[in-house]
Image (tube, rainbow, N blue to C red):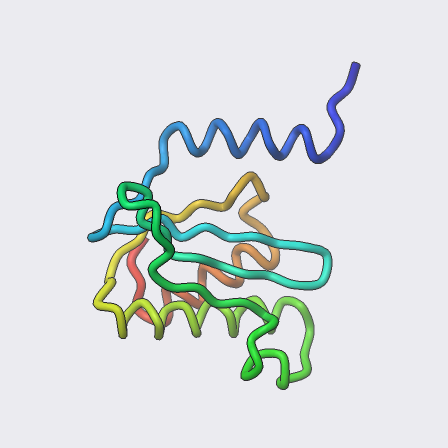
Length: 118
């Protein structure tokens, strides 16, 4: 029997998480994408803490009207700013089972342009 979309993404996510893990020096940058919103967290897996987060629901991003791609780019720029403020320069990218395409790619490119290394 064929897998549903959700089951397929969860299998891909598990395969990625076996390999990718974050530390305090190099946290995991986890992306979550819904139909309308996108969010990202910088996670220290050793301590089990979120170091920084950004979302398209944040006031400064939600005020700016634009396409979902433009919002994803703004979220990437904001997380890069917050990471720099927290003293984080490099991260491990976790696409969370989503294809590296479209909004996920736009967020990653904006974070790289903001100064994050991954």
